[in-house]
Structures are given as structure tokens and as C-alpha cells.
Length: 312
Image (cartoon, rainbow, N blue to C red; front, side, top):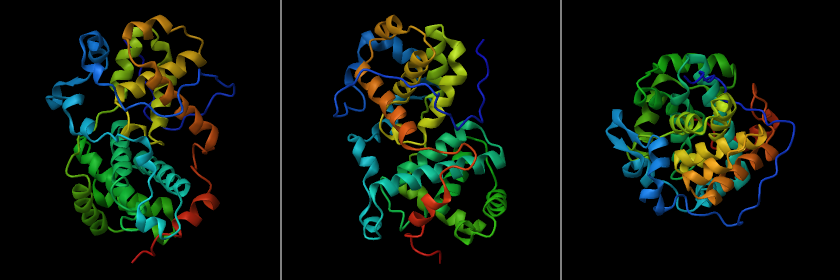
């Protein structure tokens, strides 16, 4: 029986000691290899929980899989409308990190499951591969994504409750203050922006199954925290969820001195992809210092948000 992970552990602190992974090619590999459909990879696909009876579907046939970005760099492309306002790729990333944290704080207030948070953040990040922040104000899109995700994940939160907590959390900052009608109107826009594709597969289920198969369930809490933190990045838009889970297991096993070499060899997954994802996660920790309670410093995010159109 697996120990229950802490669903509130969205913020993971990088351990004080460093980790050195073997460098992989500088150019990113494909998001997933077609060879994963082969017989020899049937075990990892089974363990990764690709079949989901509740949805009567599987990841490879899902809209989520079809929408994976072919080029990881596409996630950081700044829309023309935002470039005209002077928003740089780094500032674009900062807003996504900041608003992902805002979604988490709001979700904690209304008490929803981790899966709802993960789905909301996925919607949020996916929207901005198609729409500009100038057109779709992230301060409104974030709570609306949480509202939509709560319905999709069958944990519905009323819009009026979200509005109440937004006002409570953001105080006198009018830029974050929206009414129920604003959220309901934005919900319709988001559905269209997402092409009505709302099913999202996450790394959590494969993580638990893979840890159990590897016999290292004592790493559950540690690896779960790593998975939570991957939603501060765009990994869920680029890689298959079970590959993200494997990367988190890889990092956890190295940091906790667990020898999983033979286990990974038996899985016959592309370790270049696993290590590339691992390096992206570790690079994120090195680059961004995020307070687990406050998120990004106000003086770092406010100048970026001020470049967006004034709230009408």
C-alpha cells in the first residue's frame, strides 16, 4: 500500500546539495518516440497507466497527445501583440510562472484536489501557445482556468466563491479584481481557445505505478513534489506524462542514492528524453528562486504585468 502523498506540496525546495547528470545533446529530442508503440515497450505503457477506463480512452489516442508541441521552443514564443508591448520571452515565462502560483494559492483557498490545480495550469499554459496576454488578461484567465478545470475534474467550484477569495487575497489591487460575469464570459473564450479539448492526462498516476514497480515507494513524497513543480514549466505541453514521471523518479533516485539503473534498462525507454526532462527541471531550480508561500517577488513581476493593457 502506497503512502498518501501530500496534495498541497505544490512548491518543492531544491535540496541543498547539487546533482550532476550526464549531459545529453543540446538539441531537444522529439516529444516522444513512435517506437513506444512497439511490443518491447508494452510494459512501461502498462505501468504508466496509459489506459484510463473512466474516460474509455488512452493517452496515445487522446486530444492531449495530438496537441503536444513538436518543437519545445514553441511554448516560449511571444505572440506579436505582446511583443509590440515590449514583453520579452523571459518576461513571458515569468508571467506564466507567477500566474501558475496564483492558481495554486486560489485553489488552496477553495480547497480543491491537486489534479484540478494541474489541469487548470495546463489549460492556462496551453491558452498562451495560441493567444496573447494582451488579448487574454492572465489575471482573469488564471481563475477562469481553475473554474473550468474544477468542472471538468468533477470538483466544481462556484464562480462567486472564486471571486470572493480573489478579492480577499489581492486586497486593494484592482488589476486582479473581477466579477462573476467576467469569469463566465472568459470561460466561453477559453473553451474556444482550447478548441473544446479539455481532457488532460497527468504524471501522478504513472508516477505511483512506476515507483511501485521499481520498489522505491519510499520516494513517493519526494518525487510527487517534483511532479508538482513541473507545472511551473511547460513540460506537460511537450512530453508524454509518463516520461515526466520517469524523469522525476530519475532525479529522486539519484538525489536519494537509489540505484535504478537496471530498472530503467528493463523499461527500455529513451533515456535521452528522460535526462533532458531532468535537466530542464534542475535548470529551472537554478534559474528561478521562488518563495514557496509568496511566489515571485512583486518587484520582478509587477513591471511585466504593467505592460499589459489597462483593465477596462
